[in-house]
Image (tube, rainbow, N blue to C red; front, side, top):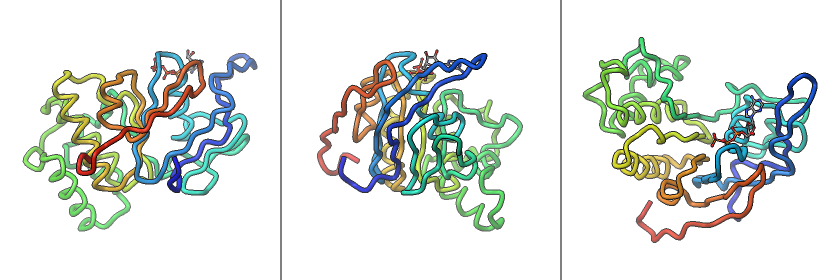
Amino acid sequence: MDATPILQLNDIRLGYKHDHRMKVVVDGYTMQVPAGEIVCLLGPSGCGKTTVLRAIAGFEPVYAGQILLDGQVIAESGRMLEPEHRRIGMMFQDYALFPHLTIEQNVAFGLRKQSQQARKQRVDELLGLVRLSDLRDRYPHELSGGQQQRVALIRSLAPSPKLLLLDEAFSNLDTEIRQQLVVEVRSILKHSGISAILVTHNLEEAEAIADHIGTMKDGKLQGWRRMDRASGCH
Ligand SMILES: Nc1ncnc2c1ncn2[C@@H]1O[C@H](COP(=O)(O)OP(=O)(O)OP(=O)(O)O)[C@@H](O)[C@H]1O
């Protein structure tokens, strides 16, 4: 990985404190995400994948080492930048769309500070990207699982994050829809130049979406594989 990194994890330690005792989950963990590239963390249940993503998002503290986003330190021991100030988007397995808001309102949610016109333009563009413009006035329960996941994706992309985190984002979907959506998400991320980290236990999914696959075991990175993609496959 030799391009300029959008994200750097330098020798970080993560864990959980209970009753003043610390359970270390990840230690001496170092990785980089090159700008515009998609990295996948693959590994068995309990190896620490979600903990790493949660620390990058700002939901778990870093007990040693540093996390840098676009060259700026966003977390180190005793210091964390709030999640809402990190410009990191997130998309998780359970969609987490707001049930009482329409599709359009869900997508616009992170754009409240923008003018009405700018917001409308961005929402129109994103709905068009995933071909859901006709369903803008529906509520989440009126959409299929695959459609809901597309809405969750564009909602997380709406504020133009520097990095998108996807935690088992496709696990709830049928195989066929999952395969289609993975290809579509890769194309959207590449088209918008957004870097991403995806966590999964599914090798096929990792190979379909990632530029680099990191294999994790017991809180450690075992190694990296660069996917060889012919040009035009993006
Ligand atoms: N809030 C918590 N308190 C204590 N231990 C936790 C907590 N959350 C996770 N752990 C432990 O940390 C370890 C890593 O969990 P993590 O969820 O990061 O793994 P994972 O690789 O994402 O697993 P999965 O694929 O099942 O989601 C596990 O041993 C887990 O039991």
